[in-house]
Every structure is written in C-alpha cells, then in structure tokens.
Length: 395
Image 1 (tube, rainbow, N blue to C red):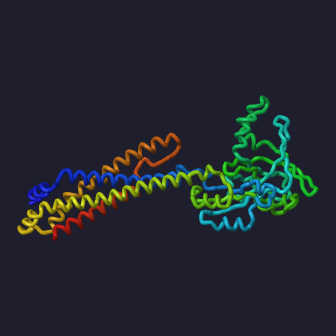
Image 2 (cartoon, rainbow, N blue to C red):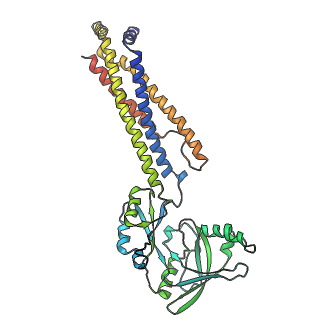
C-alpha cells in the first residue's frame, strides 16, 4: 500500500513547482532565523558579562554652558526640581550628587625631588558610586590627614607626557603615588588651614579629584561661602547607557554626559532597523512560501484525486492518507530549517572569531532564541500542511 501511495503521489508532483516551493521557503526561513540571531547577538554585546565595561552603567551629567548662560552660574547648577525629575525617570536606578568645594584649595609637594604647586578643587560623591575600595577612605573631624582619589588618566598623562618631557622628573607607579604626601591648603571666610593629603586609589569612573563626603560637608561649613552648594554635576546608575529614552531626555534638557558611553544608542537604532527589515522580509517570504507550499500540496492532491478516491474506496481511511502525505512533505521542510541553522551557525562562528581579535566577545554558538524560533517555524509549517492536506482529502 505504501509503495502504491508513493507512486501515485510522485506521479503528480511537478519538479519545477516543488523546487520553487523549497527555495522560497528556504530563503524565508533563513532571513527569519538570521534576524533572530542578530538581535540575540546585539543583546549579548550590550548585556553579557564578557563585554561588560565596569564604568558603562555610570553616567556623570552636567548642564551645557552656553553663550546665554555663561554669565550666570546659578543657571548651570542642578536645582532640587531638576534632581527630583531626573530621579523619577524609569531608566535611572540610583542617583548621587557630586558635591564641590565652595572655598579655595591649593596643593603642593613637600619634596624638592618632585616639585609642584597648583590651585585645585575637590568633589565628593556617595561611596556607592566610587569604584575604589580602601579601608583608608574615611575622615573624621580633627583628623589632619585627608584620603584622596584621583582619576587614573591623571597618572597616565604625567607618566607619558610630563615625566617624558623633563629629564629630571621620574615616572611614578601607583604605589609611589600613594606614598607621596601632598600639602593641601584651604582658604575661606578669613581662615587658612593646612592638611596632608595622600592618594588611596585611582578611579576610572569619575574624572574628578575626590575626597570623603564627611570632609566636604565639614570644610564647606567651616570655610565655604556656601554651606551646601547646589551640585554642578550628578552621577546616575543606569541599566543601559544606550537607552534611546535616556539619550532623548538629556538632549531635550540640554544636559551633557560622556558620549562614548551613549554611543550604542545610534548603533542600537541601526541594528534594530536592520533586524526589523530583515525580519519583515523573512516573515513576508515565509508567508509567501507557506502559500506556495499549500498550493503545491493542493495541486498534488488534485492531480491524484481519482487515484486517492480509488484508494479510499478500497479501504484506505482519510487519516491514513493524511499521515502519509504529511510524511512526504514535512522532511523537506525539516531539511530546510536544518540547513538554514547550519549556514547561520557557520556565519556566527566566523563573526565571533573576527570580533574576538578586537576584544568584542560573542558566543560561537547559536542562541537558544534562534533554536526556539526554528522549532516554532516547524510547528507552524506542520500545522499548515496538516490543515491543508486534511481539508482537501476530505472534500
């Protein structure tokens, strides 16, 4: 019986129509699975721990100084209303104020071997936003020693620029910097005081000379012309620095942050556009492929209608015919999906191998989402084939 059914069915199959249906379905499945894999890879780039930049979640924000507001410092600070509005945004996880000194500060060396003098300013921020952990990071009233954290690029600039330009200046390691005492002089409200500063670490997160919040609060009260000056900068922790809503919010407000950290916003829009277009093309081709395949099945059944009716007269049930026909058509669809997965897997491996040299890490394997999408496609194809075959056999 099986041999007879195969002979009848294959006699009604047109090779050209069959290959048109197969090619159309194959291209459609490839585009859909490719779009899913691209989306999974981009999410992997953004959120994977392998690609996670420790500073990427923290953004320091300040207001733009323009020709119109450059003469009014009060317009370039963050008011309580500004801070409350920023805190209320969905993309902000936590927020901290960068407090600044409202008194004059100068720093100089105690040593003639490394002479320097400079006017300076300090900032402070809640400890949760500092990427340096040190037991020495504390200060209490009456303490003459002040722990200081400086930006890492300060030391890099000194070692690669200043120290190289002058023969007598030595290059310095972090350990050497931490061992050098710094004379810190503060002046304000008719008073002058001297403290000893020492570096306890380097920060890659904040481009500022940081001191403990406790010293900032005490010194502003003691020497400052304002006890609690409004912040000129704030730092926020966000889940995704490339969130288009965040970028739009800052643009609308006229506020600035490190554009290097928000650069993925434009890239994300491009990738989302590519994924949308690729996926849309794939879905359209997939629907077209289903239609072609359904018509192909209908024509095949129609061309064998007389023989099928004869088999039913001889005792073959519609259910047996339906199962047999599904077995004839589904293997081709399964092969199509497997081939599409193999091609995308090869492309995935090649891309991750190329990006690895640029310290961008992707999984060399297909994502679970792509495999799940392949299973869904096969389920949809099976359901359409089953419905089409069942409908026309029972006519």
